[in-house]
Image (tube, helix red, strand yellow):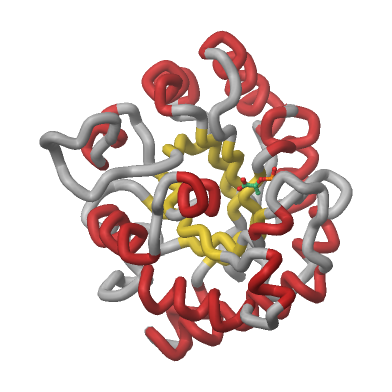
Length: 252
Ligand code: PEP
């Protein structure tokens, strides 16, 4: 049985005060739920405070990005070591918002991943097609390129193992969730590409999250798909009731 992982991507939302309150509520509401790993990814300014607050609770702390160098003249960036100091053990890499707005490419995803596998951070690597890609029937080609270039030279079974988040860009923040059939088809394809790149055993154990308007109403049918092993949750992770309902539904 593969691990299940539900991670909340708070993006650039919440004041520190609101973030602390939300983190506390998440810890309280998911306490005792077994069979699912829970992670929250607050804004970077909250990491130190929330890292202390949730330490030892079972809820993991994640960052929303990481640079590939250890230190130096990289204004505005954070290294893996700096994130580890805040008790972060997870990191989102290659989110489509970073690809679309901040010049993230499969090559920079690759650099970040190569650095991360040497650290204590477990990466959740985001891939997924745009609406134009899907309309042009390029979904599988796009996903395959993102995997083959982004994961080049990166071990699949590093510390804890790489996590892949399939996030169709057209589903993110739009309320237009992929159908279970669309999600399963893409997840199966991802696993097949991983099998070809690595081996069947490691690909079979890799956690593939779905992301894109996942909520408390559609989580059960998505999680029922054979190759959907969790979720990367944006909007719904900012409301503790919704997030907790997703966690409960995802628990084995
Ligand atoms: C995301 O940004 O990773 C995401 C899945 O957002 P949402 O759940 O709001 O679509």
